Amino acid sequence: MNRFWEPGISRTILFALSIVTFVIACYQTLVTGKMEGLYQNYWLFMLSFGMVIGLRYLRQRDKVAAAETEAARKAAAPPAKKPKKKK
Image (cartoon, rainbow, N blue to C red; front, side, top):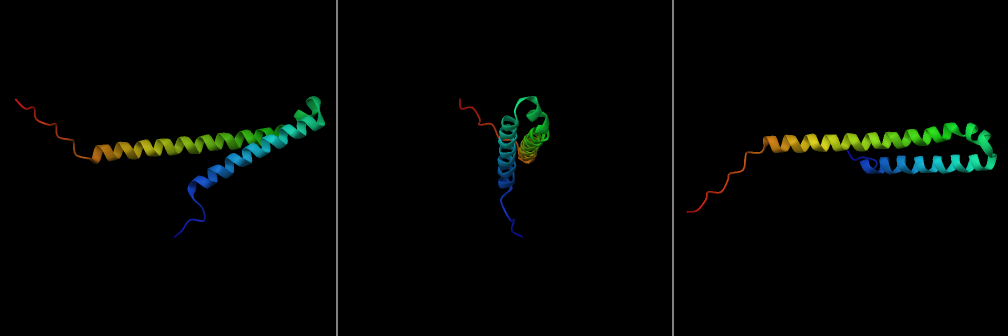
């Protein structure tokens, strides 16, 4: 079965959404002004931060899976023969 999109596109979309929500939160904070703007848009900052944390989690999970696959491949491979020394 074909996938609707490549696995990497979901991470790209997640990264783009986190940047967009951060920019919107900054803009709304500056428009409202002072600390009141920060209080009103705190949830947007946290949403953006949560998306970045999720993205980092997905990347770390992929690194661990790749390392485990590489270790299993090396363990399954027969040991390389050492060349004999010529006299």
